[in-house]
Amino acid sequence: MIALAFQDQGPEAVQSINIFSLLMGADPVVKGVLLVLVCFSAGAWGIIFYKRRQFRRSQKQTKAFLEVFRKSSRFAEVQGACGPLAESPLVGLFQAGYAELNAQLRGAGEDKPGAPAARPTLKSLEAVDRALIRATTVEVAKLEHRVPFLATTASITPYIGLFGTVWGILRSFLGIAQAGATSLGVVAPGIAEALIATAAGLFAAIPAVYFYNDLTSQVKAAVNEMEDFSMEFLTIAERNFT
Image 1 (cartoon, rainbow, N blue to C red):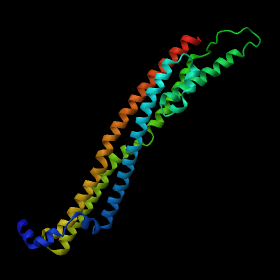
Image 2 (cartoon, one colour; image 1 turned 90 degrees about the vertical axis):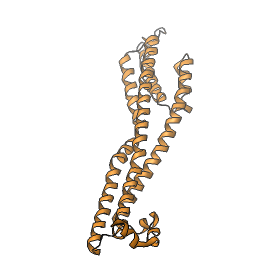
Image 3 (cartoon, one colour; image 1 turned 135 degrees about the horizontal axis):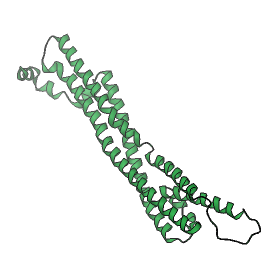
Image 4 (cartoon, rainbow, N blue to C red; image 1 turned 45 degrees about the vertical axis):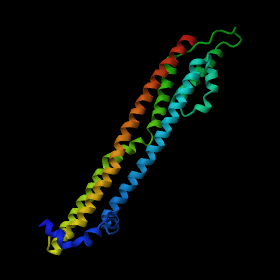
């Protein structure tokens, strides 16, 4: 029966069916589904390229900052080198900790006006720790900014594509009912539209899943690096100012 249906259509009819003509003649609902999927896919790829570039710059500047931090003998020297390295999350942590250190050390020097200069000491190392924790939260939020959109794209686009698939199959059955025939020429356009919607949904979802996991793992690595730096900063502060 299927072979006969192919013969009835003829080579000209078969050749006239292509993806472009299917898209142009698709049902408005299917076109709307494809447009939504294209928007999701374009947004996801834009975020992917932006975040990967951001992470590359961040990693490069973090490496340069750590070299400066570990070679310098004074925090003031490190602060002076932070400007060109502002995209490193460790710079945000250092500046928060350094600001808290300065605030406490200035306050300690003002407690006894006119007294002989003494070795500056911290009032509260825990306050410095809290400043570093707050800065870590801010920096993690910067790194995670827009990444959840990839998770949204990965989870929702297959269902949007499935909706287009169901709608295309429904139109195919309606075409069969209206034509009173089960030839391939009646059902093929609707099924093809359904398959295109499915493919578009997968095309949007699969890269989003992959790069969401990739970027999330990079965020976790950056968080571990920030925690290590916080411990290193606190150790230096405790050794020199307590």
